[in-house]
Image (cartoon, rainbow, N blue to C red; front, side):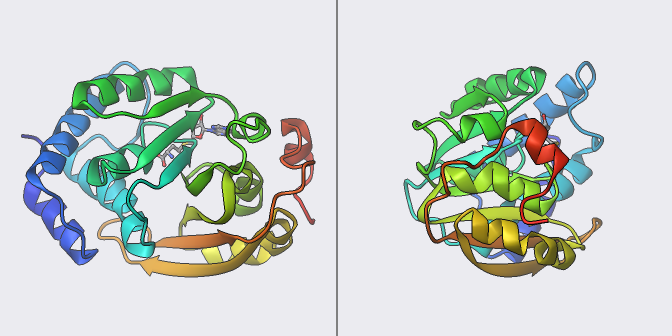
Length: 239
Ligand code: SAH
């Protein structure tokens, strides 16, 4: 056992979440694999078990105390990297149906290995979000989308909101500057069909404070979004 269970239990309790023994065992094995793989493939700068428990695991779990995700909901994690928050949320809530997306193949090789080892089930897709979001099989097919540390909020909304069905939510995990990012992204959010935004603040032990923005999808995203990657990079929506 490498991850201090007390750290995880305390973090979960402070978010009013319960992690059962299976979830704790899985998180432990996940941390072990992350440390092993990280010796060969650069997946994370955080490599000590306590840091992984707080800055990756507890941080990812904040999503579950910001929103009430109904059983069996269909969820997509964009730019999942080494699996944050997607794989942690799969472990905490094995009833949810996850699609994990990243544009970097070597990160997905790690994700596939973790999922197989833990006996979990998820769809893992190697794609750029802005291309996948145009495909009818994925567009507006999800109840929830999540993303942590992928792009500035306006760009992130163009990547993520197209996946969310009207009535669903995009949950953006942001740091201390979330309010300014939100002010700059308001026009983009409304162009993309987003509506009301709620902000949830979590002081994190030993890390920069976390702000989760839950953005409700109100209406369909117009067909011309997301734009091609080069256009997204060239000019922010609504700026
Ligand atoms: N969410 C993880 C990883 C953050 S690093 C975490 O918080 O630890 C950002 C990740 O987003 C990288 O793995 C990168 O490959 C991926 N990414 C960046 N732009 C992307 C895009 N347009 N579509 C899909 N993945 C993208």
